[in-house]
Length: 336
Image 1 (cartoon, rainbow, N blue to C red):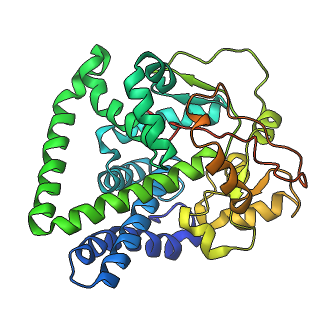
Image 2 (cartoon, rainbow, N blue to C red):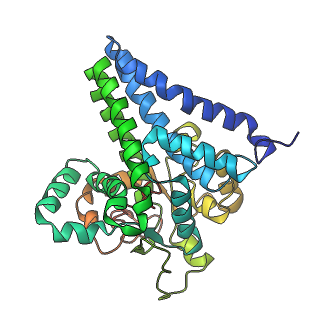
């Protein structure tokens, strides 16, 4: 019998992590409606964590890093998208746009959120106020655009029925959750906000690429050399620390981003060892979460309308990440 998983050493890590995600999500939801506050808190953390892993498994499936066959990766990717709500876009579209990120070495995004905000002052002020309050409003604008896209673009017209059907199913599911427990519905919203914030933080500080809002397959401008040297120089590994095994698993080792870009099909559980194989401990592209938290805070409003992602100072410079404004609206969950 042919193996199910792409790599022999991936059977148990993937079975354990996928099982935790698929089983932990409904278990966490069940905890949200319990009488105990401790169980509620555990439920919020469990739901948020399984949502985060479902997102990064979509990324793994997009690179065909888990299962041996493409169809198996696609089926599981679609399942994970239903868990975290990115199912309004097809897995095929999510994968196609993310591959452009790797091939063209740029952030090829779906929607020009900056132009939209500049053109709508009231929405802009609201979004900036929410971002000041640490609510990742731009990410929700991007999600709204994915849902609205089939109704504003004739090229996506065929997806209208699918989007409506998904909306009905998900609204019904949330209505049932609220009917069972309004507290559970509120806490689920809190867990979802945590999930989006974790993804926002991880996505924010992994590149100083150029961003291009391109809906179709139009190539990006050939205005500079974007080779592998450029790729590594503009890619950063945002880890808790190189040795923080369990904390780096919060986003499924996605913080070892230079290693991922060097070998995109390397699975999540190999990335820490692969990073150490490739780079020295003092590798300049490594920026710890501790260094980035200040930038995440002081630039939370500025980055929304910034012309670029900012710059990173040389290693050892005090506050070297303060000018690293970071990215917004570049999540692979909204790139269609």
